[in-house]
Image 1: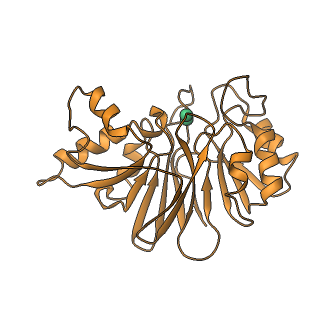
Image 2 (image 1 turned 135 degrees about the horizontal axis):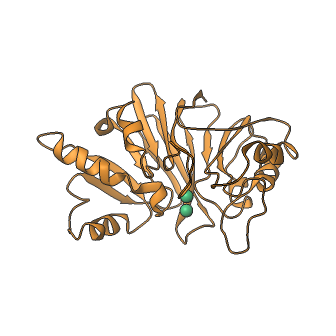
Length: 247
Ligand SMILES: [Zn+2]
Ligand SMILES: [Zn+2]
């Protein structure tokens, strides 16, 4: 299974090119997308045919994780005749919110087959996607994705408690996790992680590698990595759009 980072940004940033969360997984001839945040549609469409995606899984209903579904919707609707369709698994209410944004009932359903996401496993093509409820919005999920036996990818989505992910990460997995508040600390009431929290998670679960993402504006990258390394002896790095690795 190959991971390509399409977007690794937070909700806003002054870092050029830091588009919203979006991660592409490919196995054999199939592609699966995790999140599609602001500005990441071109990175998707330049790498795979978006209408051929096995499915899209949306971690939660913050726009930095789903708003480029609007670009995808227009692409599917107007680039093809007849329009093509893609399956989207997302927390309840996604279609209504996108429809309301356009004041157009049925806007999403024209080309998106939206399924309500719940905790548990879904098989799509060669991929098995396990959704894990995490502390963030009331209906937020992390994902563990595998394509056959062997290690998986665990993607945190946005997550306010590292303990929520501890049951999902198996030794040898690749852990792709938010570290919104860099070296920390996380302010009271903000449901995100920082480097020390990721370090504790990695030390407890022993992934093969830790890939850090979703770092908010103004936090130092190298001290974020160091905060994780202080607690975890394995590989740790920050990923940016264009990063590719095999899992
Ligand atoms: Zn986010
Ligand atoms: Zn969020």
